[in-house]
Structures are given as structure tokens and as C-alpha cells.
Length: 211
Image 1 (cartoon, rainbow, N blue to C red):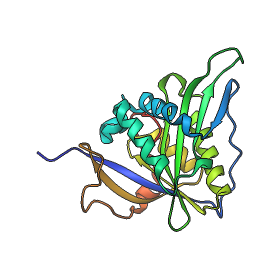
Image 2 (image 1 turned 135 degrees about the horizontal axis):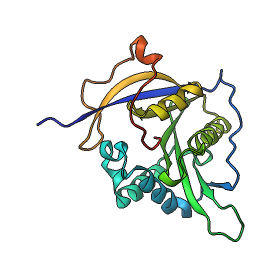
Image 3 (image 1 turned 90 degrees about the horizontal axis):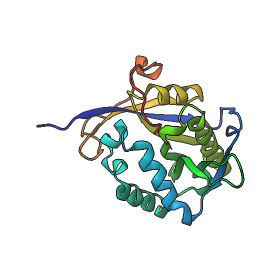
Image 4 (image 1 turned 90 degrees about the vertical axis):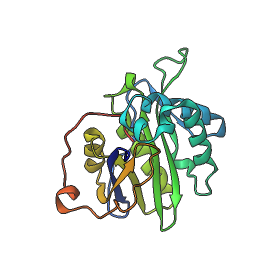
């Protein structure tokens, strides 16, 4: 039996021609910039964000805490790891309250001046507060500061909230591909350029964690 196929969009943003707002968190939230000791906290947020969502099916490592730990280790160990584009948003409305990590994003630099977003995760309890938009803008700012000219990411086509967010910031679909649910690998021969309808789409469907 062939594995389930999940349609994905590869989207890109040209930093040379876009003018985006500054990343701002809602009241009560604060930024945590990358430090190696925060790798576990990034893994925990990814796991909580994706374990019950479609992307946890497409990428099984995201539905397992140990898998998220390995993933964060692999990301941080890459030569192009971009600490300026790697952030946690934590909720701490009062200084005496313990902080709750709510959102995470990681970035890796690729050849050709491309900054690649690895994961955008927001835990269910804090969705709907604009955290996905805020952490994405923060990562874009970091890539720009690091000298990258393009930002790229992938998103499952059914994730209409995420697709709409990315398009609102200027991202455009540059590739369409299908990934297998038994490991997330690209199914051979499925990657192609988008047709006009996909390049300017509005995608209906259920909401999942941003990725």
C-alpha cells in the first residue's frame, strides 16, 4: 500500500523588496533569544505544538518528544544555523510568575543567500493571539540582520491559516511537492512549479499548528 501523500507549498519572501512591520508580542509575552541551554525548551514547544496536528503525522518526529529533541540538536548543529532567526516567545504577565514557553521558531542559512525557516510552532493554549505572526517577523528580522536576501519555508497546503499569514507578509509559492506520511520525505517526482491558481491561492481547510 502506498503511503498517504500530503501536498506542501514551498514559499519564499524576497527581503530586498519587502517592507515589513517590526515584530511585536502581545502584552504579557517576552522574547528569549537563542542560547544552547534553551534547546530543550524549543523541543518541548515543538512537541506541544505539533503532536496532535497534521504536521505531526507528516513528520513523525514532531509527534514524539525525543524526536523533537533530536530535531533541535540537528538544527543547532548545522553550519548555517542562524541564532538571530531562532526565538522563543514566553508568557509571563508578572515578573514573579513562572514563564510559560508558548511559541518557537528556528532558522538555518542555505547557499544562495537563503534563510530557511525550520519550524513555527504555537502551543494550542496560546493560539489566536498573533504569536505565529510575531515569531515569523522576528525570524525575518534576524535573517535580514545576518545578511540573507531571501526567506523560505514549507507549509502543508491544508493549513489555511498559515498559508494566509505567509501570503499576507509577501511570501509566494515557488514549488509544490508531496511528502509521505511515513517519514516526511518528498515523494519522488512530485516536486514542480506552481500553476497560476496555486501561486495566488486562498486555501480552505482545517487549522493546524503553524509550520
